[in-house]
Length: 189
Image 1 (tube, rainbow, N blue to C red):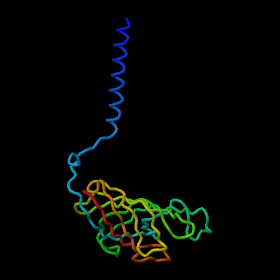
Image 2: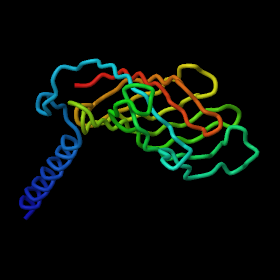
Image 3: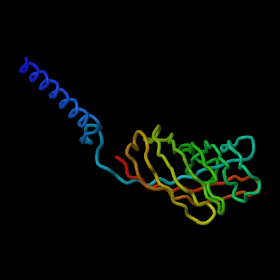
Image 4: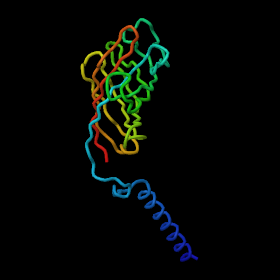
């Protein structure tokens, strides 16, 4: 009887060991990038214009959360949802190459600065259907050129990383409309 108990406990112990080892190996493992069809990494530069149209009948940026206080000169707390055209040139009639979709929020009380959360969704050429994701601070009021991180992407931009530089091309204080030049530098496969 004692020998049967020992054998039983050895069998149970071996299953426990196999189970624990399986858990350690099953969560993550190294992977050859070729298995995902990833080739040599490259660096690309994209230049386009972001049209933030907040006024008129064809607004592409709409307020979804107002600033909690009208006393704030920075509109702290305001959130704008966007579906802004991305064009080759600064004119709205220029060829559209994609959309900036997401939101920006006034994120500073003492200066003009925004939290930018958006995807550049491309609709042109070999990039059609691919996206680049931006998440970062746009210190709109204090710098001529603002830098934000590229944190990822989809399709041709899987595993993308890099940065985007934004420069105001034009701003209409009456309507709030703006055209922003973006230069995006991104590593991707």
